[in-house]
Each structure stands twice: as structure tokens, then as C-alpha cells.
Amino acid sequence: MSSHPDRRIRGFTLIEISIVIALIGFMLGGVVMTVGVQRRQQQETEVRRTLADIREALIGFAASRPEGVPYLPCPDTTGDGVENRGSVNCAQAEGRLPWVSLGLGDSDSWGNRFRYRVSPEFSANGGFGLSAMGVLRVCLRSGCASGELLAERIPAVVVSHGRNGWGAWRVGGGSAPAPSSSDELENADGSDDFVSREHSDAGGALGEFDDRLVWLSPHVLKHRMLQLGRLPEAF
Image 1 (tube, rainbow, N blue to C red):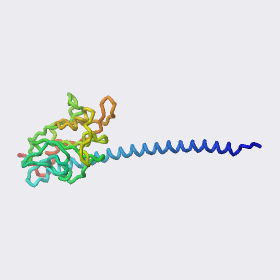
Image 2: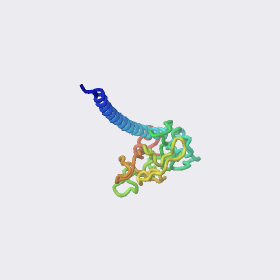
Image 3: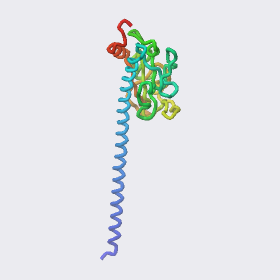
Image 4: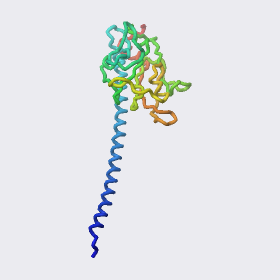
């Protein structure tokens, strides 16, 4: 009779346990990865929904001005969520989205402020008419070369700086580091041009990009004001 049966059984059991532990670790790793992907997808869905709400809120703001003529809000330049306006014109053309003035939440899905830029002719409190022209453009790439223009003469643009947050104002104060890719930098450089395109990772041919944008079409905005009786056809 062998004198070591228990040792063989114990050894085999330890091997089995090691395999089971490895399998459990592999499965847990897969679950964590799946949860992470689902969370990112949820954040993307949330920010797109929020941007759509922002667009409607901007239109509602323009339609409800007590002066009787439509105009868009000014950017928030002090971080309190309230638009910063002089007697007629905005203190600056670009800043944070004035979430308090619009009655919206204060941040995007990643805890950063939305960036907002408005064309002066659409934000002066004297109101805009059918002939008003925006100065903002949205393009497929920075530089807006021939064939890359998506929209022009835009009244207003709103930007979420995405999951990486480069160039964003943080909710807790301060700013994130500037973007390294030219397309993301275009959305944070204070110019009249913006970039909207599909996501791309750092190190790829197109460079890192995860910004999400929404903008107001001048024709849709004017049509909505006409429908609501806030923009006489002869104005």
C-alpha cells in the first residue's frame, strides 16, 4: 500500500484550486471591462441627451426675453452659472455655458463645465432679425480646409470636452491641461472655428479626439422664433 495517497490528493487539489482561482480572476477581469465599457457608453448617451436639452434651452431663452425681441444668452465668465452681460452686449463671446440662466445642470457626464460661444449679432439684447448672420463655423478638422466645412454662420456652439477633459473648466475650479491634438485644441482656443467628428484615440493618425458638440442652425432658430411669434417677418 502506498504511503503517500494524501499527498497526491492534496497536490492535485492545490492545482485545481489554482486553476479555479485563475478562471475566476479572468472572469472578473472580463466583468470589470464590460462594466467599464457600459459606463462609457452610458456617459456618451447622457452627454448627447444633455446637449440636445441645451439646444432647446437656448431656443427657449431666446423666445422668452421680456424685452419682446429674441436674443441668446451671454457666456458665464465668472463661474457662477449666470450670463455676464454689459448694458447691451456680452462681456465676452466665449466662456462657460450659463447653466443657472438656462435652468440646466452645471456639468457634463465627466464633471466638467460646458464651453459656450455665441455670435455677437445673436446675443445683443436689442434682438436679432431674419437678416442676422452668425460668425461661427464647425468643421471636420482644424484649419477647415476645402471640403471640411460642416456648418457656417452659426449663432452659438456648445462643447463638452469629453472623457479626457482636455481644455475644460473643472467644476471644482481651475482648468484642465490644454489638448495636445490640433482638433481638440480648435475647440478650446477661443476662436470662431470648432471641430466635430468621430472619436479617435491618442497615437492614431488623426490624433486624440473625444469632444462632443451641439450648435444652433441659424435657419432653425429663426424659424422657431417665427413659429412662436417672437420674430416678425419684417424685422
